Amino acid sequence: MRQDAETGDAESRGAGQSRFPPPTEYLYPFGDEPGQITAEIALSFGPGTDLSAARIEIPPLKYNKSLLLLLTQDDCKQAAFSTTWAAINGRPLSDTYFYNAPHLRGGDMPPDTYSFGKALGSTDGTGREVRFSFTTAISPEWDYMDDKAVVRPGFTENYYRFFMRAGLMWDDVIEMLNYGVGIAFHDVNTLTVDVPDSIRAHFVSSQRIVLDRLAGRGCKMLIEPNGNKAYVAAAEGYDPIQTIFLQSGGEKLRPFAVNGDLLRTRIERGLWLPAAIPAVIEAQMARPVEEREAVNIGVHGTDRSWSEMLLWLNNTYGRDGEDCLWMPAAEEYFEYNYLRHHAVVNARATENTLTLTVEMPGGPYFYYPSLTINLLGVDPGACTAVGGGETVTGLSWGRGRTADDGAEALMVNFDCRHALVAHAEHFVAVYEADPSAANRADARYFVAMLKDSDCKERLLKRIK
Image 1 (cartoon, rainbow, N blue to C red):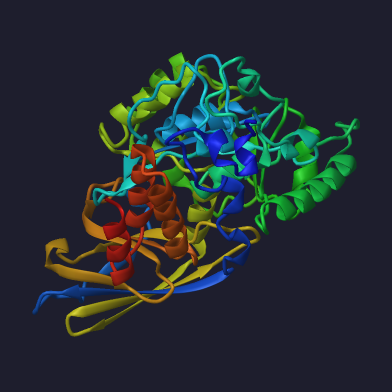
Image 2 (cartoon, rainbow, N blue to C red):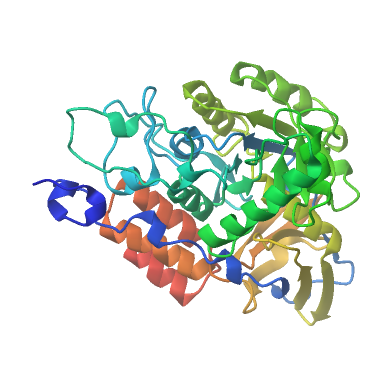
């Protein structure tokens, strides 16, 4: 008798299907991320290099990009996983059906799937892939998030299991978080949606659920629902919410003109349709960098028109185009800008080495301890090596140019996520259990994030 794949029965998976455990068994340990980090980076130069004029800057956008695009998806929609996340990460897409993370890992897909054949994103300025990301609203107080997918690979009598659900499951959210997607509060389960005190009480109860379901990861962002300003008032009285996106009445975000850390700044989005977005972007690209607004997009459900818009972004302004675009989760941009204004960088020159010590203060529920640093006033070609200390887990460097004035710089991108190596090892193990092209691409992507080391070389050798 055939059973669902979740039972662990091998027959139910079908010949050649994945035997890797479902994704709920792995979640990056966000709750263990340290709140305060000291990073040390050593830059080595050829003999006789003059370091006396060396200057350090943290650019307004990571990787010296000149255009910021943010995408926030409302209403905890299932399409955030099976369309938005899937398109970005080179996974199957369907024009008719929806699927969940256990379906993907269990090898159980809708009958009409297609794929772009590649992940979508930009580079970090040194050739390394940086995939697009986005933020999805979640609904912690609604029971549907606790539902479990029915996984039946090979079952074709009906496709009820691929009909659209009420919204995302926690399994889907966990998988997206592992790839860098951000989360945000939106609606809360109260009838008194015009009373800030009631909404605030539900933020508290929602946060308890989030911390429990996501192993200590909390939520620090609000996407205003339905233009309801009572939610904004409630968020401003609830300390964990540190960034707020509005449909109207907020500030336009100009990354190269930001002077502060944006803490509780009301930031405005645009609810454009995909066909209108190219013109919106082109209008911003025609402006000087200092005046350029972030393209801050809000959306509810996504479909083929949205996934094709993401493909257009990749091909026009991303990795396969101008490569001038940074599209992170809104949380990541907020943290980067916060660190840009609050990190303290000290430089010490000794003979042919410049050692940077970077003090990186965190905030509540911070999960992206990473920065780009530009070294100006020194010939980038004179640098022979860049190394990171113990707290630096990811590192890349190379010759670059600043986005505002085009000055030549030595660009260093570093990441201090404490479990980045274990994270890469997880995706290598996924690939070894199910050596598909998509799993191989994921494994190479996460291993490439690591700083050079013997461990990184060992992981690369395991990816055939």
